[in-house]
Length: 422
Image 1 (cartoon, rainbow, N blue to C red):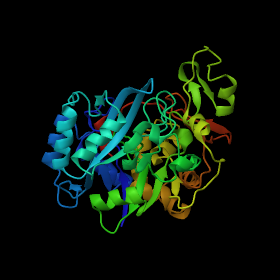
Image 2: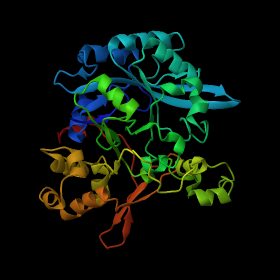
Image 3: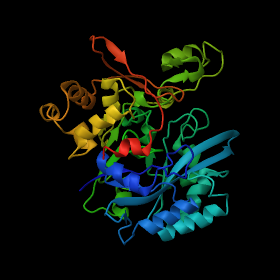
């Protein structure tokens, strides 16, 4: 059975998240997206874990069920901010757990190290080695996945505080690391350039801070399992058996793909930033070194190298982003959501993005949107790379035949303004 999973999300108790990010909305929009397994997010938060226990049912499979039968897996994210080898480190890690009993033990152990009530993604001053040791003492079934491993500020290979190898970060606990989350600004092809990553499962999840369909499931990992159980899924991660493929956004769309400086509107590809010694040509301050340049720094293979036994991937932008670009309206506008609902009605977004042929698409939307959907799955759309916290920009053909850039407007739509469509 195909399991389309998003196992890195947050709740309304994390910083900078939607106030309506609850279990009901997570399930509702996951179904619309086509995701059939979600992480719970934030299980260390005292209020959220009470809600999880009250609303989700567990059994021997290790997969929690909502009242309507939707699948959840216990998951949280930990921020480790500490010093190692004379340098400040800021590393985020995803934690997966098999049941509430193990989660209670995790909460007890972490509670002795710091507060858990102020943020769904708590911060601790100890290192990744200690984190893994602590988790494995609780249960060998706990899985630790380094999160968005290339992001400059908070990640394993981040240019601002990361390491050059997995072993430098996790030392003797590296043996317990089996999977790495590639993040929005990189895709598997970029990671294949590092031979040191060959033995790891490369996974993709959304790290969503809201439930809107242009966020939740924007990156996902698809498993092919005989039966959906926690143990089967963890085995797939650890052995790459049953790991079918990942769904990615174009890495140019990520907020840190290119090197740059947002305040000066400076965005540079690696060859250009190296000429400036990573100094902003406008203000002479240090640039934020992007993921593409960081991969280039650590790569020991040429561009285009494909390792044996690689897990394939597909690259698509979210449907709402495509409609927004065609219409020239905000991704959260009423007109975009009306069209979005019209397209996914009776199906789900992943089926539209990945499977529906052009001939069927033109029956449910206009020819221009149908054409963009097909070009999206064929990799024929161009995205101006994101940099220093700025999302990439999708480029489409304007009404005059010239290329038209749609700069995304970022704001939080109201719940009532969108619920009328579902």
